[in-house]
Amino acid sequence: MEVQLVRARRDSHRGKKQIRRSGTHSQRAPEKPRSCIVIGAGLAGLSAAYRLKTRGWNVTVLEALQKVGGRVFSYKFEQAPKLTCELGAEWIGVQHKAIRRLCDELGLKLQRHRYSFAFWNGGKPPSRFFKPGAWCFSRKVGRNFKAFKKLFVNYDAAQIRDLDQFDWWSVLRSLGFTNEELRNRDLMDSTDFGETIRLTSAYGAAAEYSEGTDTDAMDYKIRGGNNQLPYALAGELDPDALYLSAKVRAIHQTSAGVKVFVNGRKRPFRAEFCICSVPAQCLLKIKWKPALPEEQAAAAQQLQYSRIMKTAVLFNRRFWPHYKRSGFSAFTTRISDFCFDSTYGQRGSKGILCSYSIGDKADDLSSEPSKANIKEWIRGDMMKVTRTKETQSKKPKGKKSQGKQSEIVAIDVRPQAWQKVPWIGGAYAFYRPGQWFTVRPILQRAHGRVLFAGEHLADLQGFMEGAVNTGEAAADQL
Ligand SMILES: Cc1cc2nc3c(=O)[nH]c(=O)nc-3n(C[C@H](O)[C@H](O)[C@H](O)COP(=O)(O)OP(=O)(O)OC[C@H]3O[C@@H](n4cnc5c(N)ncnc54)[C@H](O)[C@@H]3O)c2cc1C
View 1 (cartoon, rainbow, N blue to C red):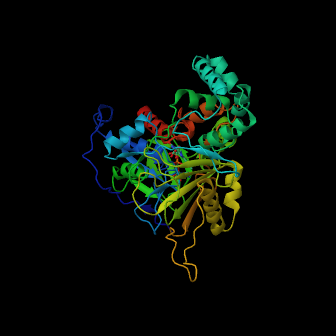
View 2 (cartoon, rainbow, N blue to C red):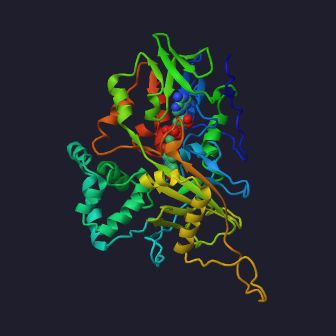
View 3 (cartoon, rainbow, N blue to C red):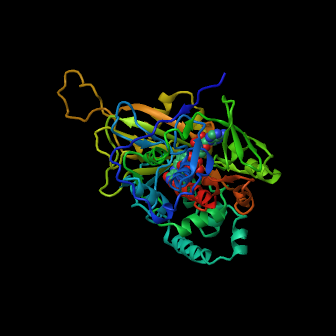
């Protein structure tokens, strides 16, 4: 029996402006519409589909999950429906031009999303919070780091390849970072790569910190949630163009075109071309005819995805510090790892703190069977970091009220361990030393009529911006 696939409804979104199409999008539609199947409704797939659609192509988007957005996942607790937190991609950088262009085109507003930060090793609470983007290590190491960045931007191809053989931790150590500074740097930088900097390519890290801004692309988010962007892109497609719960199991190619087979549906989808935007490891779950070149299958096998668990905890009140122009955040050596105020810039008495656990910590935390424990651990850590004292909710017997504030209650918790999400399997691609110039170019190659897209293939790898860049580039190639 043929299983009914879910055809997605057009998503409307409030406050949408008249859509302005930029010059690059408004080329004349070809006489007979050409056709393309896009696999994956993350930002790479949807931006490819949107671009093709605006150029008059017939586009079909097939997504394995029951929602669009992939690793963009905004969440609301039912006890606080006006507050939004991000369980996937969080920050948009000032330099992320493609995302900002799409937001502008689709009438989406950005809001400020910068964070002050401190370090806490479980002992005395931090005495100092740094401003967003501030240098938080010694002056001496600051001078060395600056000099290294200056040299790096002038590296030739051979020097870059050499650097890619090293890990970031070793390079920082050679620049004079002390053990404590290395630990703090690891706490910070591992949020960018999703694994410890002892395993991260020094080239990848040097490129990120030399070519970006001081705020490390942590500048904005989309008002109402980052998922407004995938919703808006999906809303621009024809009503019957998007299939959710459509798990692609096989791709067959002939000289005439591409046939894509989906679980639970006998008849294949057909088109002239296909853009496949699934994470590298998901390529291996698909049966290819002709088969993927051996080298490409091996590259997909070798590329690891990082382990990140985000845990949003809803509190009855916001007990953490408030700054005028930035939110609260803390890097800790505890299970909470990096923790920040998800509801900074959103009105309300309740608030959400989000823990961002990396690597082994993310695996350990995601193995904890009790959500109540996770909630209390994060609550306990953050009470200590912020020097917040426990208060009693009940009036002590026989005494008058001391006028104390109400008890701080962690109302609910929502964990999301990306390494365990089916059809995605990790937070971002994690290029280890030696892989950037070997594994990535192989994965970027087209296979017959199938082009590839996705965060893992981008120059700005690990970012929404990178995902969109690859989706639009694939559409441009057709
Ligand atoms: C915790 C976390 C924090 C992040 N923080 C940031 C941040 O602050 N800023 C930033 O810019 N980026 C951030 N990112 C990265 C950003 O989310 C990704 O780079 C981007 O969303 C990836 O888009 P994509 O389209 O390449 O992949 P995805 O979003 O993964 O889309 C691929 C889609 O393919 C589907 N799929 C897989 N296999 C099949 C199949 N066989 N058939 C059909 N469909 C299939 C998947 O279900 C998925 O929906 C973060 C990511 C995570 C997880």
